[in-house]
Image (cartoon, rainbow, N blue to C red; front, side, top):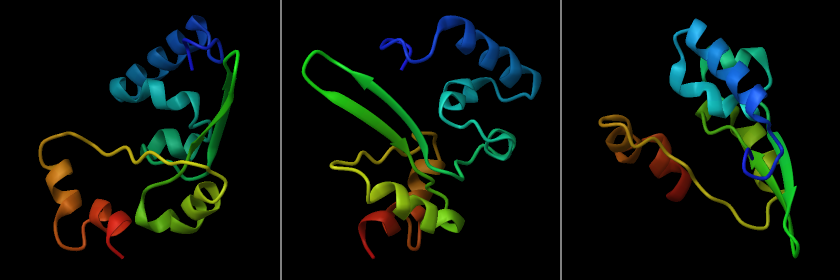
Length: 112
């Protein structure tokens, strides 16, 4: 979003400072779509975030839908608006593996 001009450097710097103050240094980029204070405090997307950008040939809308099991209805309301979807999962050691274990949240997204 920064590269498309939807979020300026000053705003990203502000998010980075605020995240650092809350000991959440790595979360600042997500705050471009997580505008709800609850989302920022908990580090979980609750509402569907939206952002758009255009190229010379296409218009793209990014929908940041919740992935936490408690917010499945919100995720569904975001997902049904999409033509395609990309599932982004944590690559942190332990979190990635846990997601694919029996009844893991990531595997539940693929195998109902």
